[in-house]
Length: 245
Image (tube, rainbow, N blue to C red; front, top):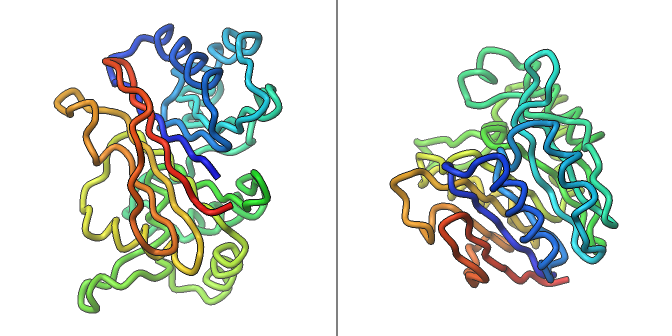
């Protein structure tokens, strides 16, 4: 399976983002294409690209920053069979402090993962974590940063274990590169263990070199894998990874 990861430059205008998405998607030879978070700025951008996409072979996941109602943000969409489809889900929480104070954040995310965040591409079962939702996991520093489910609730932990068992690929679009990379690496390893895979893509900060390694992370069977840069411009970068079908 070919997987492409895409990052945009923060400074792109709405029009440049739309045009870049169309160009990248239409030219992709991948099976699975993941755009970093905030791919498009506004829900109105959807109608401006709908008739311009032309690629029935690739399934793409992207995000709209502003949903246009009740201040809802970070809404997930996919393109499949040349159709733009809402995933009927958006980011639940952003960091560990939110979920630590409210276990219902975890409960809601698990509900989303068992309903609106389940996808299949080329027989691979996919689960979607939006940016900081990877904080559904925590690291135990005293145990070499061992990873475990964050919330101390047996039923929620059981639900998460079931999701983990039923997922082949975790996709994790990011808005910006994450900190605490030592801990994040342990989580990527955890989510990709036992034959699974994990992919994340972040947008470029203004000080980053376009081809900065920290923008894209890919793990398969618990190990980081190296991708090939397919295209790098001042506006965006595309990397390709290969995993076993």
